[in-house]
Length: 549
Image 1 (tube, rainbow, N blue to C red):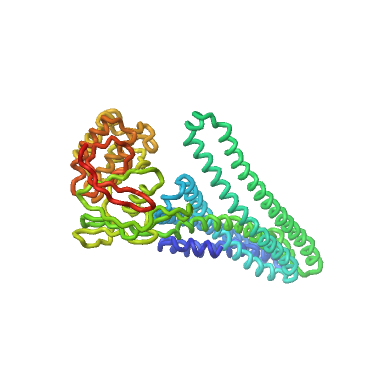
Image 2: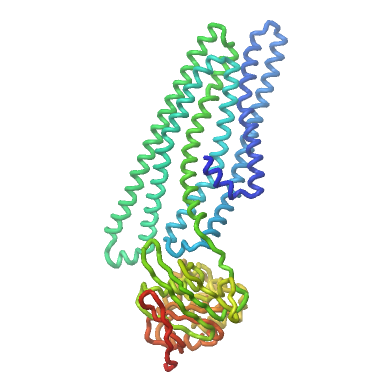
């Protein structure tokens, strides 16, 4: 619990901390007031045997009124603690999600992590932590206080009876501790298995057309069945452990009740406990055992919270950097002994690259897949960092300590399920309607605009054809009118020759005064490239090109 509490405290702002203090106070009052009535039950029953009838009636009415007041107060503080807990959970969940997304956004994990798996993991873990940790904390803290107060009242009723009951509670706690480690392992295994199932299931839905095309439904169904079986197997083991835990604690609970009934009856016959004390014990026999049972349930919940918190901590501990955009116009990008490799693949992509890129120049990159083209432009954009060497961004021959403003047409760029205009404005919210209309014309989107108007374009633009998606992504790229660098990854893909030629002519004015990089496989080039960047042996050579079409 203390590990999770330490990590959770990092996301508590002053409002959450203030509410947490109020919650602790409410729990203290609730725990105390929920046990105190046992004292007045004892006094009320013992008042029946008073010789003075008037005194007896007075005491019965007084202690009865106090008992009712205490019970109502306990209900009030219980409801108050539930309300405060719900408020804290909501505030904390919001803060955690924002912090996680911000940390994720500033890291380079999105370059090498499955987005579906990652999003499912973040949603699942943040929801589990926010919905269960503080409620578990409330139960944990309340149970400990209730147990301590209950022991005090038990001792006040009869010290020897307490000595008989307490060891049973201790055995329950030790049993819980023994089961705890195994439960933590099962919780971690189940999360991993569920993650694998969701990945398999999601890819099966996204790739349904491909599976149908190649008649692989049965084969893929077998994969889903295998993943589902793994989850089922771990769930059964986890349920078996929880059932065994419930059996052990339940048995100990019944043993405790039996001991209370037998020994308290013997103590009454010997005059060691009054009838009021016996009645109080019968009515509040749960005041020692129930807190221990709650602690057991709470520990199981906290174990799962700990597993989720460790996974969240992995995201929070990712190396991050602030991608600050330069206010000065970047006119030169210089690579000095830049090397990059992917640790997971143990593969060198770029090795001691030295080159310079300058404004008012267009650069063509050609070559087979896997030679480092995308890695190169991602380094320029600052999405990934060099493993060694440095990249300098210069304005008038002076280094700046910020990244250039970049317009980047990605080969697999993402489109949001909003209108065409809203997708374009993601790159530049300040665009006027006139500027948006001009971009739509430049990117040959007029017919599509007439057809869709302000309608959403579907998840990742699934209501559009491949060519329509490409042209809309291009409009989004060109919307960054103040960009210092323009990167076009496979501009010609998904476009017919006529449309591609027209777009190449239309975008000429956008290329002025910028560093422009084109990654192309097509031989139908309608751009006058100044240089070609040739990738060979993990290095890059700059070669001059002809301007003849």
